Amino acid sequence: MDHLFKELEKVEAMVNAKMERLIPEEGDGRIGENRLIQAIKYSALSPGKRVRPFLVLKSAALFGVSESCALQVAAAIEFIHCFSLIHDDLPALDDDDERRGQPSCHKKFDEATAILAGDALLCYAFEILSHETTHVDPSIRCELVSSFAKSVGIDGMIAGQMLDIISEDMSLSIEQITRLQRLKTGQLFQIACEAGAILGKTGKSVRNSLRGYASNLGLVFQITDDLLDVTTDVNDDGTPRNDKSSGKGTYVSVMGIEKATQQAKILTEQAISHLIPFGKSADMLRDLAMFILNRTR
Ligand code: GRG
Image 1 (spheres, protein in one colour):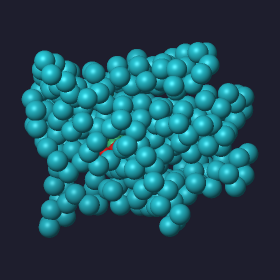
Image 2 (tube, helix red, strand yellow):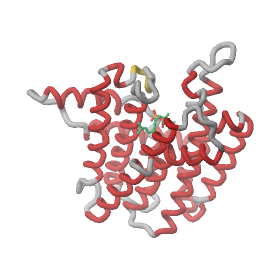
Image 3 (tube, helix red, strand yellow):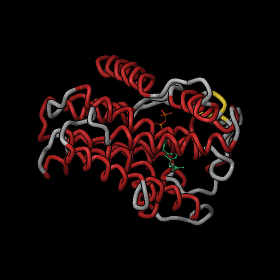
């Protein structure tokens, strides 16, 4: 695991540096642009785990994709993730005052700025994906753009968020929760891994293996997130400190802590089994699955 931690740190530094280079400079007489840039820098460069960029880089490495191309896509996916976090924190959605240990974007700036900074980040991610420095082949760039759009939009992460909002206070079955989480969290994990395969121009079966890995990993990530919510964010008397998820169906609320923990272990084994075709070259992805299963943040 030491090797994984070093690698996670390395990826974090590389992706941060890349995002910093990609975010435009402020300029004289550009008051509107400058405010967007300030809000984007504040949110995107704040300390996140960079799990999705890690998945892009390690999947791309399986196919010998150049690091500079993969890094462009890694930054783009982190910008999309960051858009989702900024919007999710807004009063109309989750209404969170804090994100990554600092005031959320709308608290630091204001609601309008947070909405617009999120919109700009999403657009900018697609601008990066479609740029020739991301891949020389226009058909690959086009595939990246269309696959990311599908994973994020009407049938993707945003649909998951919509479902999450309208199903609040409904009692969902495990199947319904799984569908919700596959959309809300899983779609971005899947495109992170698939992007490596797209850049590497691989065949269908290889892509399916990576999709299988990512799909199971996304669910493990969500279960461990739910477990961390109930086990770490508690008052001294054991009651939940942040009551936002109460009323929402989660694996933990439906299955209980013990069964949800067991389910996360099974899904991790399934995720890892999808990596068999890649042999030892996928060890870093295996280690990441174990890290997500056992994570403490
Ligand atoms: C389109 C508004 C909108 C939302 C999409 C991703 C998402 C849905 C909402 C974000 C809120 C959330 C808690 C979603 C569940 C997935 C999840 C645990 C996200 C947090 O990801 P981490 O833990 O965050 O990778 P860091 O800060 O490490 O990048």
